[in-house]
Length: 111
Length: 113
Image (cartoon, rainbow over all chains, first blue to last red; front, side, top):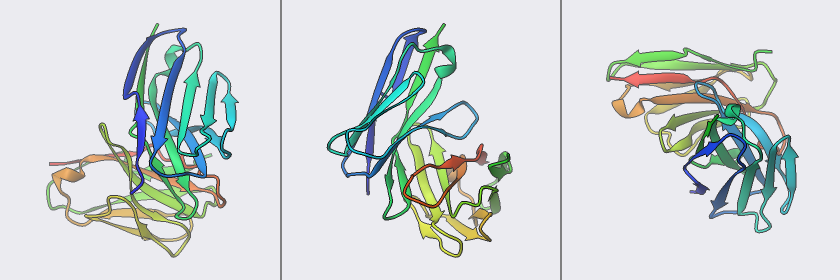
């Protein structure tokens, strides 16, 4: 089956620092998505990317859809304590109507 | 705006017991999904329903059954619970179209003793 390799597994940073995480796949996806999960809650969509090379921002978050369609990255600028959570990348296979998720990056932010 | 509602929030079972996890969405979405989340494993797809009347296996379907009762409701059943099924279960729905945008419920934390 399809697999997504997400890195790093975890990050512990100081408030104000920038953060970068990425995801690579053995398969091509038509859509890449990034989700955030707060403790005790379900994941919530942050950014969706639909075209190879696309760069999209949502506030302090910026994500890119890799040219090869097999990778994506997410940057968070000037981190704040409420950025704490688990960030998941996901690739969407429209043929099967399913998403494949990476294993997540746990982000901890120290005030 | 309820979105995706899952019940129960928490459940403890003994090995061999059965139970059904309920999920309902009020967004008129065609597709619905069940995932399980385990530490270090991310979200793994158990079953999904691309549209009312259809269901398909995902990555980890063994030990589970599903029912798409109608467009709103998609339930997950454990016929004979095992300790390996201790996990957090998430239901999600997706609108029609190639967007990949899932809307998740808040999860059910299940412990099987």
